[in-house]
Image (cartoon, rainbow, N blue to C red; front, side):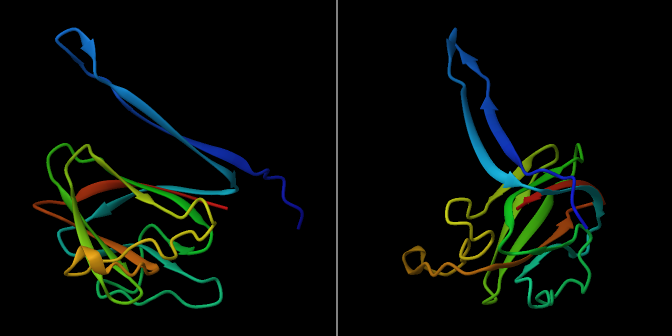
Length: 169
């Protein structure tokens, strides 16, 4: 099969716009990621029970089993290929907790309020994707970066809709 999809450059721009006492205090930062040829954009509903959102594994292995579920509502991805992940809480009231779990079993959690987004930084320089990008430990000085295995989510009070955007090479 010959593809008709050409690689493209993903451009991500984060802009803050605020004027205080007549002075512009905003900023704009742009990241460009070349060679993107796969994009997944989904809106998924997350309940108040921990739900598997995204999983990552090497192309030659199966996904790491989650304590939340054997299925991931937004998909399974090759850890070497992912370059950008954005998760946006589309709810206007309720927050969601995102849990990031490493292959070594460490995890950290992030609260994402309604209307807010979380961007996960992948290895875009050396091309490692989600490899060696996270650690959670009791001491910040003992960082040993590990592979991101999965992301799970659970809503606080009521179901929330999450927009999930993943770009890969």
